[in-house]
Amino acid sequence: MPTAARSDLRTLVESSLTLIEANQHPSGAYPASPNYPVYQYSWLRDGAFIADAMSRADRVDSADRFLRWCAAVIDARAGRISDLVARAGCGEEISADEMLPTRYTLDGGDGDEPWWNFQLDGYGTWLWVLMAHTARHGRPLDAYCPAIASSVDYLVAFGDRPCYDWWEEHAEHRHVATVGSVLAGLRAVLHARNEHGKPLLDAERARAATASVSALEALLASEGIAEGHLTKWLGGTAVDGSLLACLTPFEVVDPHGPVAQRTYQQVRGELLRGGVYRYLGDTFYGGGEWLILTAWLGWHEARTGRPEEALRRLDWIAAQATPDGHLPEQVSGNTQHPEYIAEWTGRWGRVATPLLWSHAMFVTLALEVGL
Image (cartoon, rainbow, N blue to C red; front, side, top):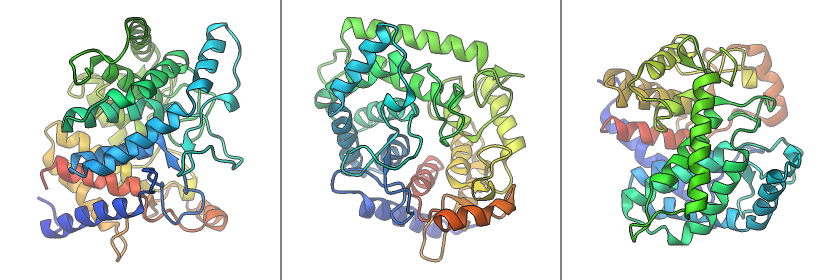
């Protein structure tokens, strides 16, 4: 059982939901953090998981608003996507700075900071969350169909391309968590039906998406597993906390199967202290323990028959809250490289607090354990 009082945990769940709603932009976008200087953007990946938590907690309007914002962002770039896909189909080399960004201003514009910005994971994640949310609450999909089609075209054309990982690092690699996000989104769309019981994709687009799913599955099986576990990037051997999403909820591999079990053991053995590191060798704010990843570990544990472990993660996250109930991005109790803390604090200030994604993942884990 949790060491924290259940009433205290429930209070933090409710205050987390209130905090997320209070900081949601009128456009529907969720800022990554309301007061951290460089997080005044909405990332499709982070925001989609925040929307997923709101959907699970029956804050349906908040989730709807974010998903509509995603669709509007993508619809506004439909012509750009079509052009990129056509050029790729002709064999043209397309530079990373021409690709769609991973984060947008809260009103849906492209950011203008000189900051690397090409990631694919958010486009798969928003599709996965959209399908889960609309199925969960019986919401219509018709208005989303143009954005769904554009997203599928983009992922089919570029889903196996090297890009920055979840942490905006190592653009030269193809990252397993990114490939998993793309797979999850494409699979979800292929399995979904609209309110009239018809497939969301036309026959030609469905064939292309099916072929892409098969190719990505084969790629992961051949290059994304080493010593029985998923790896940080294709052809590597290390693990990364983001791999937990490939187990739960994306189920890129069977969450109860041997690859998932070995990945879980490897992540837990290498990256878990009180909370979970992103990866060994991390130096961002010294490389501390991340709340979202600790919640992810608990989420997988809850789904695979380890309830006491999941409750332990929930307790640990709650213990990191500030006196006003705010959850940070990471904490430094077991920092890997404390000599880097001053460098990052001098550059951008203290660790992002509150981080809306941390609050959302705490809510998801709390719901998962039946709080």
